[in-house]
Image 1 (cartoon, rainbow, N blue to C red):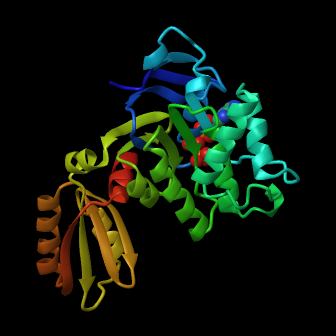
Image 2: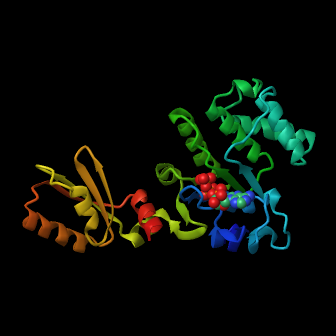
Image 3: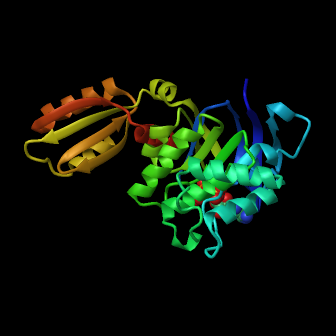
Length: 302
Ligand SMILES: Nc1ncnc2c1ncn2[C@@H]1O[C@H](COP(=O)(O)OP(=O)(O)OP(=O)(O)O)[C@@H](O)[C@H]1O
């Protein structure tokens, strides 16, 4: 049974639906990536789920407590740009967050200790936050979001501002989190989504345009990329490949072209007839199944 059910969620600013009749369910113990380009409506969706802003219309219901409208106790949230007091320690910050969440003194110190351990900050717990790296701050932010043991933890772009080491630390932590909670995190970095989540919600221009397990979406979309290289690169080849029916994206790196197509058979036939007609000399023709990026581009272009 689902943990959270979102139905027809809509947020309107200046007559524009920045979140537009979005419906989805979140299931316990899953990690779900909320994907979408800038301005798609990801943050606004998360903020409505966290109870920070009210939807214009639509409903959010937590299975445990369908009667209550205040579901903040079930939700932990890490904003995209968390702010910290640099002069207090990580441990003091967690104590403060625990008090705000209404925990008893005993609960506050017990939870803080466990969470510092979980986010690998036990040794740094007494250090001032001003001395923390970006990755350490982000992990502390995640600990703060977990202080009241929420069922759903939401992280808004948790790794986009981090260097590769910080990114790795936080992604590893996200993997740990899903043992105890449902994780919903927004990102526009497709590799990260692929690495830690089982399901995706793909938003564009306020609408949910794709949702479900990554493996199913891959199957449904049948996204395919044809990789091509030429003995001698024909003139205007990039443009010519783009003009082929059913091709929706062409990228090039070091003379190798990745041609993403909706319909493999049609695209392959056209490419081979152009090879004959125009004398293109192929040195590579390879078919690969679509990456999440192909799925993303295809869905957004549609
Ligand atoms: N308080 C607000 N008032 C007016 N418009 C807003 C407000 N908050 C968000 N928007 C608009 O809603 C749209 C969606 O914004 P949102 O921040 O949810 O997108 P996002 O997918 O999180 O993008 P990003 O990756 O850039 O953070 C944007 O066009 C934004 O300008």
